[in-house]
Amino acid sequence: MRPLEDVRIIAVEQYGAGPFGSVHLADLGADVLKIEEPTSGGDVGRYVPPYNKGEDSLFFETFNRNKRSLSLDLGTPGGRKVFEDLVRTSDAVYSNLRGDVPAKIKITYDDLKHLNPAIVCCSLTGFGMTGPRAKQPGYDYILQGLAGWMDLTGDPDGPPTKSGLSLVDFCGGYVAALSLMAGLHAARRDGIGGDCDVSLYDTAISMLTYPAAWHLNAGYRPGRTKNSAHPSLVPFQAFEASDGWFVVGCAKEKFWVRLAEAIGLAELLDDPRFTDFAARGKHKDELLPLLEKRFAESTVDHWVSLLTEAGVPTGPINDVEQALTEEHTLARGLIATTDHEVWGEVRQVTSPVRFGNEPAEYRRAPRRNENFDEVMELLGYSAEDVSGLVDAGAFGSIAQATP
Image 1: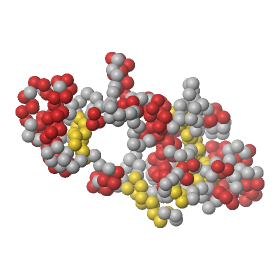
Image 2: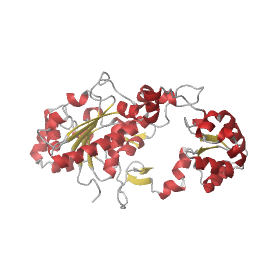
Image 3: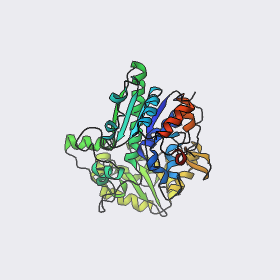
Image 4: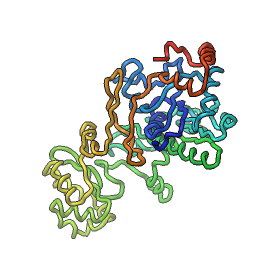
């Protein structure tokens, strides 16, 4: 069996952060059943441009492989009945909504424990379910600003800059998945579930890590650094070669020794200005120009090959195409291909979360409400039961929603 094959998760999720968190659980074998609101067309991620055809977008495929889909209107009595029947047969309810919404639509542990005392209710929200910002919507870009990330990123003379990736969303998804797994472990041990109150804001603040500790304990005020330099270790930054950029990371003194010897500047090792981290940090404005001049004399490939052989941490600064075609990317099986009725096939990066030696299996993302019949059978509904629920609007417009 795959690691999570005995876990069923009801996912009231959409767009990025929530689906990103649960896709790793689905890749590990969990039965992740997406609940899609029918009157608004389901998960908005289905329509994200520029690579979308109708309800099929490559954005949606990225976050929803290996999942199932059911259109369900939780605002109707019939839809609520189906949801509650699913809770009785599931291990977790997972959502990414505004902080006040889980309680409003009654998907917290207190709302559901009478149906299943062991249910785990994981709510990934922008700002959490408590606090003065709980009712505010939270988006990655805004969170990168609020949490100080943008103030730390970019050129020292440039404007505050966000990461090129939605890292708050993605890290929040990972935190939600980890919290959910911790909750499942406790629920299976004790027979009692509970709430996971996870937020993008908490995630972003917690990732300030050691700069936060430096500030809180020593008044440190972090700032942007030239060429993405490490705030305290020198040299540890990007350098420009004759044909591009690469990174050198001297995180230990032995790497500094190897670097100086490999690039023909061994005399720097006897210079009292550069003897250790503290000295090199104090005299970095004298050291870095020497290194920059030497690195400008040859190519990225030359320096990366030379330093790698010398045992100095280094690597080229790839563009996305280069990263996806790196030999190591392919060797690690980080590109998966799934068949798709609209796209023919979809190639995408895989989850880094792994257990055991069995290769992961990948199935394309579900069409909207694709798994309606399977879920009705799972719940043991008769044809008459289904007909009554359809007539009551539990699933929205079945003709529209069912592929």
